[in-house]
Structures are given as C-alpha cells and as structure tokens.
Image 1 (cartoon, rainbow, N blue to C red):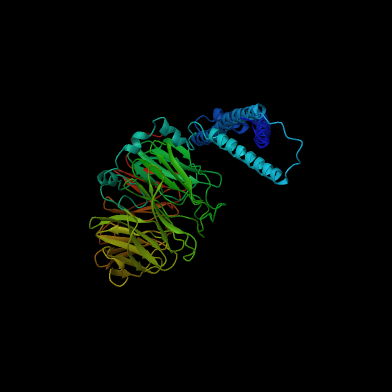
Image 2: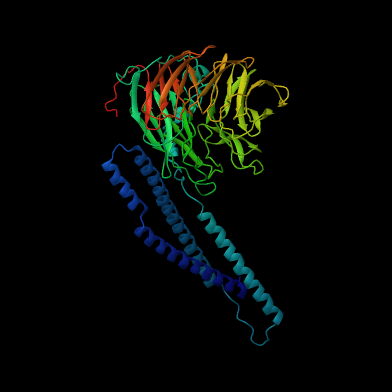
Length: 584
C-alpha cells in the first residue's frame, strides 16, 4: 500500500531524533570514561595514606575502622560507575536500533506521484503538518519508553554499611537469631547505668571490702583510659565496655575483665542525616557523658553530637545512625537502657514548646524504630529506669516538671506526676516496689507506680527535703535509700516511710553516685578518695583510701570485682587473676 507523505516525514523525524540521542549519549559515555580513568575510586590517595599509617600502627583498631568505612564508600562509588556504564551501553544499543528501524521505514515507503495539475489545498496542507507533528511525538514517546525499560537498574546494589556485608556473608546471623537474654543472666551482669535493676544495687556481688595501693592487695589491674569520657563502665561476662569521644572521633572500648587488656576498640562513624553542626557540647560533659547499655548480644553507645551506634559484643558493627545536632545547654547526657532485645533512647532536648523531645524503642539487631513517643518536655539529663510492676514492664522518665511512666511494650503512657523543679540530673531508681525520684535541691519522693493518669495527689507516698542531690542518683536495696549530695552529705532513709536513719558529712565533693554491694555503700570522690560505709540503719565507715585519680563515673559490679572509671585510669578492684604486663 502506498505511503502518505505524512508517514514518510514522521519516520524521518524519528530517525533524526534517535540519531541525536545516540550522539549525545556517546559523548557523555566518552567523558565519563575519561573521568573514571583519571579519578579511579580504588586508587584513592586518602585510602593509600591510611593503609600506610596502618603499616606503621598495625594494632590501631580505630584506623582499621576508618579504612573499612572508606573502602566501602569507594567501592560503592566504583560499582555505581560500572552500573552507569552498563546502562549507557544498553541505552546506546537501543538508540542505534531505533535509528536503524526508523531509517529503514522511511526509505521503504512508496509515495504516489503527485498530481501537478491541481493547486494545493490549504486545508490538506494543515492536516499534513498536524499529522506529521503527531507522528514525530508518538515516535519519540515510543523510543523513550523503550529506553527507560533498558535503563532499569540491573543486578544487586552494594551494601551501604560494613555490617550489611557481614550479614551477606553469613557473619553475625546467628547473633540476630538468638532469643533475648534471660532476666537471670541479665542480673548477673552490670548492663546499664545504675545496674541491672536501675537502683545502684548489686544483689549477688561480693566485691572486696578493702584494697591497698602499696602492695596491690585487692587491686586486680588498672589501665590508662585512652580517650576522655564521663560515662560509667558496663560489665558483661568477662568483658568491660565504655565509650569516649572528642571532636574528631567517637569510640567504644572493650577490655578483658581478668587482665585489663584491650579486646577491641571501634570508631562510631554515623552518616549525618539530621541537623548540621555539633550541637551544644560543653567541656563539663564532653562528647561521651552517656553510659552505654547492652542486651548481652550487642552493646550500644550514644554521643553528645547525636551519633548512635550498635556493635556486637565481639566488636562487629551492627548499625549506626545520627540524630543530628542536639539542643541541650549542658550537652546530651542521658544514658541508654535496654528492654529484652530493644534499645531505649530518651532524647530530650530544646524547650517544652518546641516539640523536639522523643522516647524511642529501637530494634537492637537492625536499628529500626519499633515505636516512638513525642514528649512535650524540654531538655533533661536524668536517665530512664525500667522495671516490672504487676506483670507489666514500665519505663519511667524525668523532665521538668513531670515524672512519666510508659509501657515498655508499645510506649503507651501509664501515669504521670508533676513533682520536679530545677535542672533534672539525678536519675530515678526502682526498689522495694517504689520509684524514688530526686527533684534537685528540692525534695526526695517515693512514688507508688501502679496508678493511671495523673497520680500527683494520689501516689506520692512520702517526701524528704534535706540535702537532696543535684547530680548523683539515689541507691536502694529495697530496705534503705541512700542519697549523696555534691558537697558530700550522705543520708540514709527508710524505704517504706521515708524516715531518716542517719546522715554524715564527708566534706568532699562527689559526682559519682553511691552504689550498694556486699552490704556496703561505695563512694568515690572527685579527688580520688574511696570510702566504704555499712549499708545499715546506723552509720559506720568501714574503709577509706586515697587513689591517684579523679572520679566522676559511677562504679560497676560483677562477682568479686568492682570496675570504676577515673579520669586517667580504668580500675578493677578485686582478686588479681592475670597480671597486666605494664601498668603506670
């Protein structure tokens, strides 16, 4: 059948469009090829320099972490270049094929010999132009659809994190498949700030009643702290965990409980997805004031610049993320907690009317948000406490002016009490069926945590208003409650009715919270004095010694050992099982 002029013209235009596309694409591919040859990501000068540094310091775990992260980023770039090159080839093949088809169709059209005896009809000419434009547009759309189909991504994407590579290789899969640690096992360790029950009481521990720096009796080991931080140590099994940070780096450290030797040391490098900047990080709290937490499978650390990281207890990165710069005038210092296989993060910041504060529950294995609850409250520094009442696990948080309890399972609010003043730094504790809350320099409160809604007028059992601490948290074994002021006033209260049993002024400064173990209250002062007091209804000091360090962090207990972090050394007090090769 003879072709119309419109059809022949349409095929010609389509051929020209395909040819132009092929020329532009070919030029782009040539430029890209030249660029990748001169900027090969696998020949990065930075990576080469880091590897040279590793040859000089082969045991630098932080440097190894930086190399792994940079290598992963470079390989991602390299494989992206390969994917773009492959896509370009397929697009070019498609464009050439379209050009040839259109050219052949245009050449094969048979036109009728026009009748020159009749004048051109203007209406016919208009229809011709309209049809030609429509034909060209249709041809262009058809080519575009074909090329888009060819441009679809091909092959699997390179993992975005080192941990995902480990998972792809089968590493760490058995950790994620394991069930949560039992509460019996959890309580044998010191997995979070203020201990397993969040009350600074080690029920099963039998730490030393005395130690001597001169003959090293009662001192298992001490080792220099490699990076600054005010957070307290954790103990799980035969390993001790703590974190540190500076402007240039944030790290998690793991040392052996028996010897003090470093087991692993990893940098926390989080992608910056939140607000830019480092936030408010004063020297008084620094980059690492928040105590870590562990669920026995992984360890978690948060830093004042908003970085949050999870590593297996063997030191492999599970996941990292960043909240971005945090708005807190004294720096973010709230410690982490765990509930079964979930990580609990209380992220209080800004002013109460800004709506920046949140309470999160993350899946410990993946870092995905299980639930989150907005908090119409401002910045605070008190860490949450998790406990069980009447078969239900609660999370109690503090921020002016409220103590609020949430259900650990889904974050639903259970009760609240308006009872706080001042800058809330002391953390709440749970003991003897009660939540004890210190409203700084105001009053100590005992709250019965079985209410619903506003319990301010119904569930506050008793209060005490003398020398209420403004930094340290209370400690309780369920029978007595001990508070320690910054200026050194230690007081003992009956946990049931709040009657004061005794008080004693040590006339020295404390930031480390009192802790109970082996029937003794353990105190570590800012200038290095360690004091043991009987955890009894009558005051009795049973031991005192001066240590060459300064203490701000609270002690951790496990079995027959105490681990306390000083500003210069990490100390393990208890029977020595293995001598450290070199101690300062």
